[in-house]
Image 1 (tube, rainbow, N blue to C red):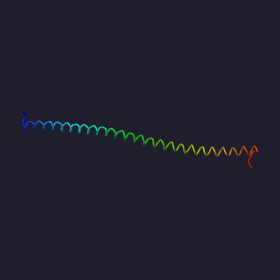
Image 2: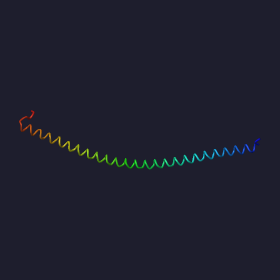
Image 3: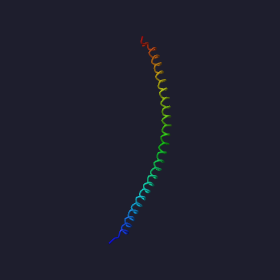
Length: 95
């Protein structure tokens, strides 16, 4: 027959073993979380750098588009002048 001291010692030992495994699991999860977090931090820094680079490229494209629009406005103005000149030379001026 098992006396109460032996049962208590066995129960305490099992409880401490389970608790120790739980603590080890928490430590492992904490380490994994730290690894994932640092990896995500590096990835986020890389993405931020790429976003900054893309913003610069978008700004350059906007400047280029503004120049194209200015050029197109000038071409339209020139075409209107040429159209008026041609109509005047042909005597086809609306009046």
